[in-house]
Amino acid sequence: MKGFSTPAYVYDTQLLNDTLESIKAETCNDPAFCVHYAIKANDQHDILTMIAKQGFGADCVSGGEVRASIEAGFPAELITFAGVGKADWEIVLALENGIGMFNVESREEMEVISEIATAMNKVAHISLRINPDVHANTHAHITTGRAENKFGIASEDMLEVVRLSNDLPGLSFEGLHFHIGSQLLDMSDFEALCLRINQLQDKLESAGFHAKNINVGGGLGVDYEHPQEHPIANFKAYFSTFRQHLQLLQGQRLHFELGRSIVAQAGILLSKVLYVKHTATKNFVILDAGMTELLRPALYGALHKIENLSAEERHTDESPECVDVVGPICESSDVFARDYLLPHTQRGDLVAIRTAGAYGQTMASTYNHRPLPKVYFI
Ligand SMILES: Cc1ncc(COP(=O)(O)O)c(C=O)c1O
Image (cartoon, rainbow, N blue to C red):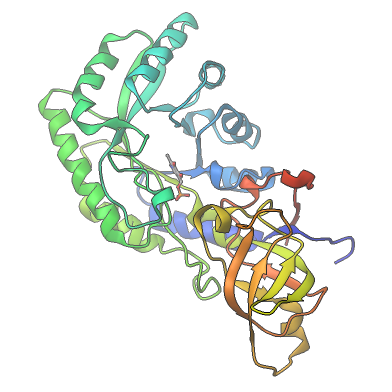
């Protein structure tokens, strides 16, 4: 490709579109279902535009994300705004733009939204993010719905906070919001969430309150091990779990905030081998991409499938070699994979790190004064 250089994110727009179509096929007959794209997974403008064009909403966690989603064409009423630490300016920005919903994470935050909305002569539509204390089967750093996590309002405080929301000016209580974690592949986690929501809804209704909206967050996982075999996440199982186990009340809308499962497989990180270094104990393949381009391995110990594209083209029948695939950053955690089998690798080889479309480019940094990665679409 002319002018192509690494490290670079390459996005497959066809796969992204197929993924969006697959979600629509699983949900579009049901007007009660509303899918928002969690733009923290990938906030690349062209990706946002493609998703907005397909009629999805946006789930934001900062003023910057609210702005980016509006610029990309998401209708304001389909934008939700979550996050434990919304700054005053972010609340003002969201109110000015008339976003659909604030997912409120504490009583203290709700009081501030009420004050700001009243001063601006606006009404903020709010859902309360309830911490359901559901233990999801995923990495400790990406579980969010346990009592010890910082997110949401404790379920035992729900009624008191709903009551307060009715008493405070400038607020309209619209529903409940949940999010139990990310990269969840076991549908029993979502089933447990549904059962918990059913109990909380009973409690709410018995106390004389009604939620017009239930938001179950995101979290559906993808196949990092065999991305080519499963390029599209199991949306069928995911949505049918909610259909089967969540007791929606008359007229209620069910919102989803999917991030990873929409964009992860559509992106790869391409990198060149700078050096193959042999020591007494290890062989290191040193790439021109590192934790600055893809932080997940250093942050969570995440493992992405790595392929040597140049070696595949050479068609050699040498046996694979056991290597540590590392980046150039001055941190010992800058490792993509340890004791990984790659075909015989040489300086200059092109390497693909798969399933990098979610929480990849968005987490890139300029640490070590490095430029941000380039971006290409195919
Ligand atoms: C509140 C909320 N909603 C949605 C998401 C998206 O999750 P995922 O990318 O796993 O679908 C997250 C991720 O952290 C989140 O915190």
